[in-house]
Length: 277
Image 1 (tube, helix red, strand yellow):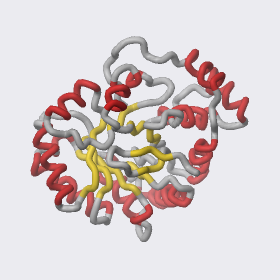
Image 2 (cartoon, one colour; image 1 turned 180 degrees about the horizontal axis):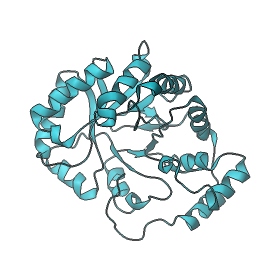
Image 3 (cartoon, one colour; image 1 turned 60 degrees about the horizontal axis):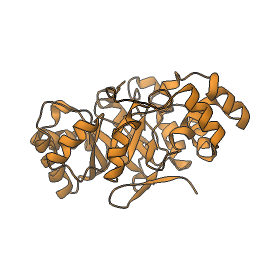
């Protein structure tokens, strides 16, 4: 059975989804991108993450094409720009995203990063969209522990996820953000879980990969998914890469594997600024 993560309301979603950052930017690549997303859905990677920022809406259009005829099988995530996150702006931005996605609802709608609009206004916009049936859940992205405290103070206690940069080389959130989210039952969405294929292929990742007969990036994905509260959303625009990502679900890392990775990529010992790409 594929791994899953539980949202605060009890709904379960796949622990491994599909990201779309950099999709929708070149028309000549659209067919391959759509095919890759569809292949992922076939393999059970039915959580798809996108944003109005990606390709200036182009990625949402790619996703809309990919889920055509299969919308009910997919958990759609999209994100609103901070400068659009006033109460009325959130609603208007969501309507534009719905049109590009060719759907009547977004399953999880996130504030892309903290901005200048009061969080209470953003939350009010999210709640209005929920009441209208346009979104099912709302959450945030690139929010650190202090940002989450501000969100809760602004009435955002129904936050369903926080999407942050997380992979073996970017472990800062483990220090205080992950414990805070855990206390509130809020899962983490890990973007760039293989650092856009820039993680080292040697060292511990390479050694563990050789031991298991897999690719180092599959080890990195399995490492991210070792936690029961993390959803990994790697982007893959080719079917072969989607298939490799999906295979990482079956990779079980043992204590020796995890210790080797810790030696190369030590867990944080102090608070640091939340990293973003």
